[in-house]
Image 1 (cartoon, rainbow, N blue to C red):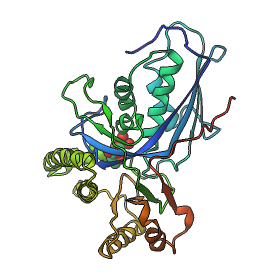
Image 2: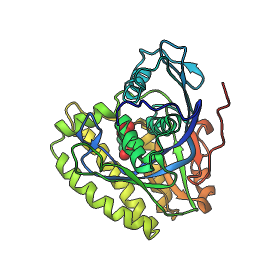
Image 3: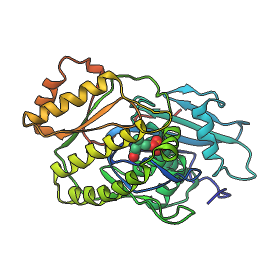
Length: 337
Ligand code: PMV
């Protein structure tokens, strides 16, 4: 699907998508234009933390309007340009007007918390409603993937698996929900810095694939982990899942340290938190960590152990901590303009 000539199905479409954290990481592409991965990945969503997007077509406008957290974006900014380039694929031909996009995130952007994932997933859902496409989740996931790879997993609450796919057109590279309820699981997100990351995941990923001498080993190992992690989710084997989650994240970061030039997203506070989590585990509290393209540390634990995690982080600034229930549902935040 490229351009749509259909009339608009509604005046204003509102859609929500949660952010997601990969348990088995996506890090490497076989096709950069379509964001086709070298291997599949597995994620758990962040419940009510993510993006609301409202999309409409303004018949009187000459140019698109984009706002982020209620602030109008300059259309030439990197964020807006990326979004508009994506929207160009779907812009109705021969109809006067322009898109109006209001997007609101309730998570810090570009701090390694995958806000582009929830952003593109919400946008695709809104496009589906506005244009009345009636596409199923699999098709929407393929479209979201083109905006940002990890966005294909943000179509779903809970666990999602992104199939690597084999086809050159990417039609078989989509995510689907792993329909498993595991109500006791919780995320604690530690954000030592809310600054924007220095190197985009897009660039960093490219650099790893091009210059990490053992990139193929990473790909082969990730495929093994994906199968094992999927089994661990289905059997609710927390120890196995946690061990794979940590290993996948650490190997991904090790691959970035093995590039030319080397790349490191961690801050001293990231490393400090890694030691705290391992220490807590040695004391008998089962919890595991994972890091993405930023200094944040995400810790997976059980609700019953919350007091132990509170104690472990009691000396830290409360605003650097986000306690997330992956199973909580979002409240509608955007009201009519
Ligand atoms: O989809 P992107 O380009 O934002 O890449 C996301 C990469 C990681 O977050 C580091 C890993 C993952 O699987 O989400």
